[in-house]
Image (cartoon, rainbow, N blue to C red):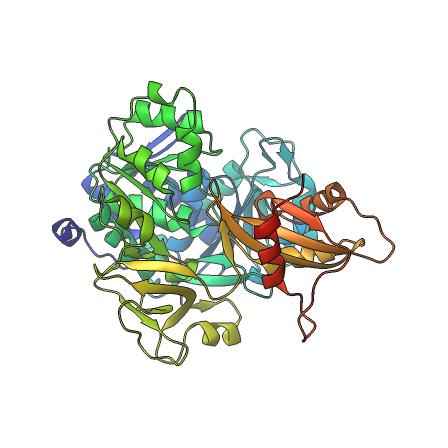
Length: 534
């Protein structure tokens, strides 16, 4: 931990204040690179200010929600910064969502303005956008982000920006002055055991604190890193983008992750920190021409979201002797434990590092008592950096954050003799696949929505490539001869592709517990014993 570097960083009230700070102290330094777009900090400031003024002119202000449907790029980033700077609460929408997922999140958050692409890759969103507008009267305007989409039913971004002339610099400054450190900058939807996503409100001060801690722990200079995470994920907005902003570094956005393009960019742009999830790192290292890329600029390699295998760690150590990992949740805004950069394979493989010194982190048993070193307990976190609440869900908020202010993560860990924590698993059923949080009940509900399916059970099992993968056992409706391909096609219409189970097994009758619930433990044991029949 380079504490001196952290101490030299100003502690600003709002995450968005760092745009103006670096536009003043290092205006010519590159802030954002995305394809042919290369913005320095002065460019970024001008773009953010223009969008913020246009938002104010459109009647958007403190507490209003602003949604964005976009890949990770310069548009998403400037819209987040503009929205949060005036006190609006920004919401990211994943291009992989299906219509029902969009409708649920938007009907819950009720954004006033929606920014969206009409076309992303080969997918055309016109139908979804019309449905979203038709079913959500709270939306006052929908603005397209596509270039050269003038012949459209929707407003274009250049037209929206024209509104900025209606707002003076003084009016903009006044709106920003009303935004406090405790105010929410964004809302991130994360599912629960019921399968219904909850919107976690993340405050400015949380993004600032967590980003400053990353600057000290990672100790990379200059900070130059890629961002290919989906914009509805805290890793994209917080762990990468806000961290890079607070460090005064350069973000290289990749709208679509591609191993060869990623490595080529690292070599060309002299990326200093290579980050991702173990899956993306493995994809890159699995290329036949991997050794052809010059990765000498890399000062640090880090990952999160899942554990890395010993084999992968060994391969990464051939590139850099400084490897790191971390642990955190959406609700903690950023990481609360870090592995200090090291070449120690044991530490990297078997732990999630040590808690941040300024954070309160404890392990408790089922009775709420602190556990002794070496004993397992649930991880609890407390501080002014964690989420403020779940949007419009006081019951769920009180269940997650107790009266003493402790956030209950639902994750089990034990403290090792060296002070590092070892993550044991989850008290609930959620599992992580390729860095995504997957919640079985949400998948089960989608499966059971199929007319040919009577019951379904979903759980995660370990996987070398994805960390964990989803397994589904399905009981068909009586007298129905359902096929796996039919179920997969049904799921494709309801779920993002990363949520669809990797294996779906059809059983005439699923085992039940005495209380009538599906015996998932028995099914999981059966799968681990027998696997998938070819």
